[in-house]
Image 1 (spheres, rainbow, N blue to C red):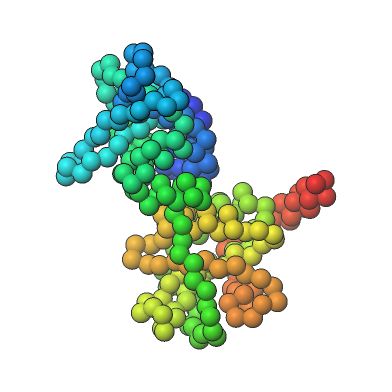
Image 2 (cartoon, rainbow, N blue to C red):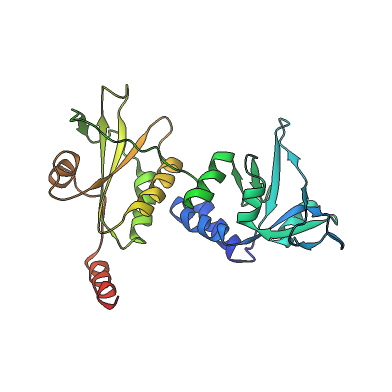
Length: 263
C-alpha cells in the first residue's frame, strides 16, 4: 500500500509518521472493514463476507522465530499484493475480527511498508477503551513528599507529539512537564505531564497516555495528571513554577466559546 487506497490506509500512513495521529487511526480502524485470509463453512467460493452463523477458519503466519500471528489487511488489493497468488479471503468488520481472535497476536499488513503488530493486551485495550494502551491509575491516599524539577534531557519528541494532540482537543487549555521523584514509591524519577482543561478530559488523557508510551525516551517512565487551578500540590507547582509547553491559542478559545454558545 505505497499509495493509500482508502481512509483506513490513509490513517495508517499518518499514524506511522506521527504518533499524534495514532488515536485517529485506532478510531478509523475500529469502524472499518478489514480483509483476512481464510474461509467459512457457508456455501459459495469462500470469497466475500461472513453469513450469520457461519464458522470462520483463519490462516496463521509465522515470524522468523516461529511465533505464530494472524495477518489482516487494510484492503483486498494489499492482501493480493502480499500473497501474489489467488487465495480465499473474507471481508469483515474489524471489531468482529478482534473479538474472534482475542488472545492472539495480530499483524496488520505484514510485509508492507505501513503495518502494525498488535499484541493481545493492545486488542483488549482497543475493544475496551478505543485506544491501544490503557495506563495504570494510581490514587495518592495520603499526603506524600515528592521531588520536583525539570528534566536534564528534554523529551522533545514526546512534547512535540502531545502538543499536536492537544491542538486537536478544544477542551485542553494548557499542558506542563516536569520531572517527579517519589522516593517512597519508585527508585527512579519519572516524567510528569500535567494537563489543564475544561470538562471531561478522560479520553484525551487516555490518548495522551498512549502517545506518551510510544514517544517517551528509552528507559524512562511517564505519568499524567490533571491540573486544576485552586488545588494545592502538583497543580499549584505547575501553574506557579512551570511554563506550559502547550497553550491553547486565543483564537481557539474564542471558537470554543462560540461553539458552546450554540449548543
